[in-house]
Length: 194
Image 1 (spheres, helix red, strand yellow):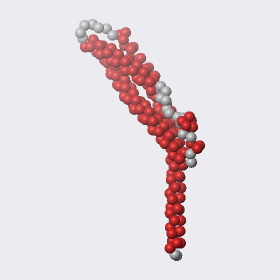
Image 2 (cartoon, rainbow, N blue to C red; image 1 turned 60 degrees about the vertical axis):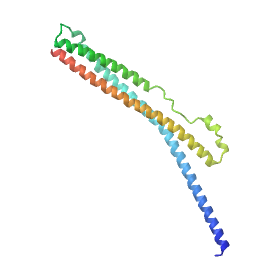
Image 3 (cartoon, one colour; image 1 turned 135 degrees about the vertical axis):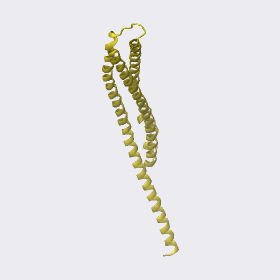
Image 4 (cartoon, one colour; image 1 turned 90 degrees about the vertical axis):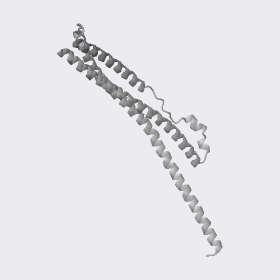
């Protein structure tokens, strides 16, 4: 092989490498775009699942309400007859019932606020039209779409994480309310025994 043929073969190999790298990059961009489309769809599914969890917890609060209303059946039996142990227990019982009610009302308000519309961002057709993707080469258009999808998905995921953290925080108040209810029931039993 002479020098000229070697140069032609070298140039041909370089072009093949460039085309191969470009093909790999195009395939990578297409795969990334498809992955982002799936993730974009999953964000809405996650939001719906979070809403469903809130509905389930509110339903549990309905059962908790029935449990709590049983606490007040002893109110008519309470009598204060001077500074006795029964009077102290009755006072603690009334305070505990007040704490349970305050905690329960707070939980309901907290959970209802979690059901407020969260404003998940969507792919805005006007914004996409302003990018003039139809006038760009395909790879540039895909790169622009990838950037737009990433931006929207990241903002939506931040909102979902915040809502999830709030839900977990609300669950702690439910546990507190249940514990307060059991303490109040224990005091109610002590009042009946004494």
